[in-house]
Image (cartoon, rainbow, N blue to C red; front, side, top):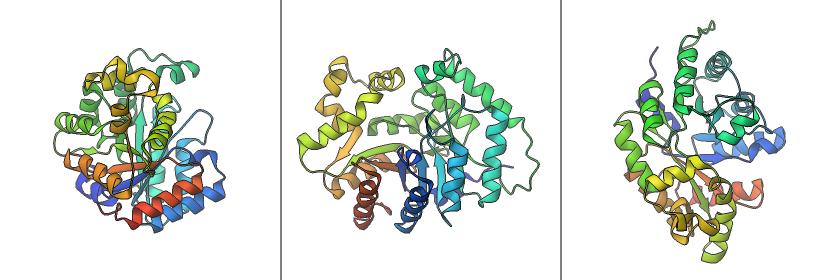
Length: 302
């Protein structure tokens, strides 16, 4: 069975929501939040996975069960967190149970997290290729109308090329708009390109950048992200002291809703099919309020 990529793009919509903190909240709050995201008109909700949080497929089932039409995507499920057979069967079980509303985002994670699980990170692209081979060899015995689609967390050309050949597309994270243009050139016209875009609804430059730098500090300590930015032309001085103003502004969109929407449009114009916005806020309820503001400003249909 072959995934209809054009139909999947329509189901996912042009703007989704990325939330990496839901897994730390109660299941009751998560159900409420997912229902609100759906009510606001966003078609896809992306969730992260950490070693200390909810397991990605179980977490997705919780959110899918709380909604009627919302797509749920993992951003990402680590290939080191479950073997390929479990990933394939788990994803297809969700696709079967929830009418094709699940998207399996897969990634190789980062060297420190992989080492903590007792694995070797030395050849991440080869590891992903082997994992996909094993997934493809798994036979799901249930009545499956269509297999769960897969997107790969991909930043640089080798992983992007693998995403184009062996998945339905790519989900880049922590990237500026110029990366979206490069990624589209590598992927070609058909595969899904779904970058994440962090946003801060704050018009005060100093305060907004301070919020952005707190968020960025984790990612600027990880070689995957820094090396990708270097490839785009960013230099050592841009990574110092939490990031130069130029880098902060390229990674995190801040300001009035119209300015946020302009950044989303820039990604779409550069070749993205779907942009998942991640609002930074003090509390999960504040993040929902920011989504309400953006939805009212027409971010959903951008």
